[in-house]
Image (cartoon, rainbow, N blue to C red; front, side, top):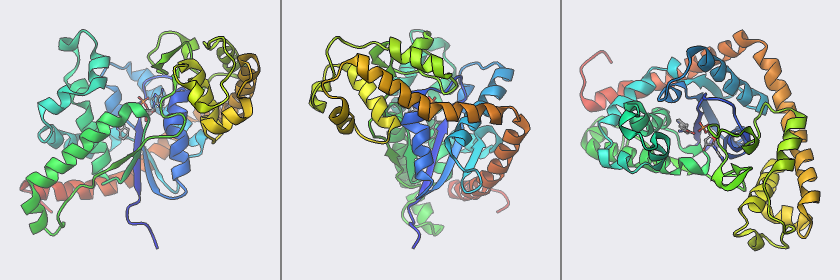
Length: 346
Ligand code: AMP
Ligand code: TRP
């Protein structure tokens, strides 16, 4: 029997180099979910332009994220891979959600505060309302599950608030039209594992991020062997050996991060890593981690390079994916317009 609650959706912004945090917190988990779910993976280019993007660079970044999806093992034949701007219904539903979400809800979004910084007056309106577009991405496909890193938790809660308010505001109409007692599902976030929040290699209190100035702070999916080894060698640690149990990682942000990364790459948990390396010094753990990272990441970056050598093929995959996504999106928007009472052809 097929599982009725089965659709997975997630998105990654094409805004620069993908790093190990994106891979372990998101992409690697996207790959695993393909076995058991119908998956839609989106390169969210309309999110990227909430801050200015050089057009030629944006094109390259859309292709690189797609190449990272494919090189990591996402199958565009069995699932859907596309870039957001090709399916205009995302923007249409986002507008309607601009009218569902309340100013107060968006005012609470911590990512906006971080990204806008001190100069909030000068941030784009899109950067402020971006969580509504994210809710539209998810609900356009009535997605049941959304795998993301820890930093997206608040946006997923907002998505549920928007779905609930929409379902409630239009409850009578939804039922009259035969959609039952709710139209949009209560999407569940899939956040977890040992690497839901991969930290900066130079400062274990900040998350690994594309926007960090120092390249030593992150491992990029395109880094070569020597670079990966060097970055792990230079990763900040304390002077103690690894603890004998997981509790001993508390208040040791850098050690905790490296153990989490090892577990994430190796598909185990921190307990298993501590069972193997507890009591050992970093001079022993770091080379083992570097070897593991190179072994698992080098084939992905090699495959990405091959794929990027043929951009027309990547573009064709995105166009095919967009055709499949659009079929679902058109149907949802037809229904949503009817729920609102807009006039037009069915
Ligand atoms: P972004 O690059 O911001 O579009 O993020 C793409 C995905 O990677 C999202 O699911 C994020 O939650 C996830 N992600 C980004 N940075 C990290 C990190 N440092 N640790 C874990 N997951 C992350
Ligand atoms: N906001 C997400 C990020 O910055 C990217 C994103 C956009 C997304 N739309 C989404 C993630 C829908 C999951 C589902 O990482």
